[in-house]
Length: 92
Image 1 (cartoon, rainbow, N blue to C red):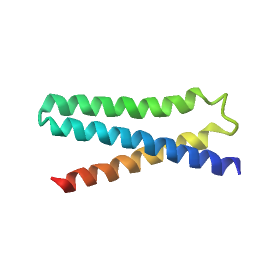
Image 2 (image 1 turned 45 degrees about the vertical axis):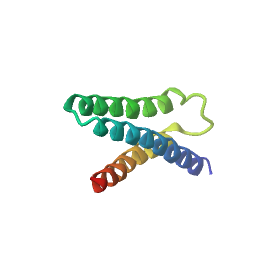
Image 3 (image 1 turned 90 degrees about the vertical axis):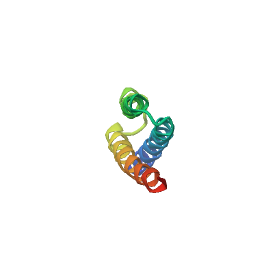
């Protein structure tokens, strides 16, 4: 049961970070400049690293094995970013 909880929390945490990254991507694309797009990509990368880093730093406080949560968060970040990117591309 602990593994299922860790995976569920990781998927939720990663999805929230992916949504935040999607907002950053939409705003940087709306500005229609190369520098805004580069800054948006850098900020999205920092959001991803921060989301995974928080899970890693909280490993001693979590009541379950953090590796499952870390893997699930990374999966949710990857899939969420792909889905959001395709939706943004489809609107253009």
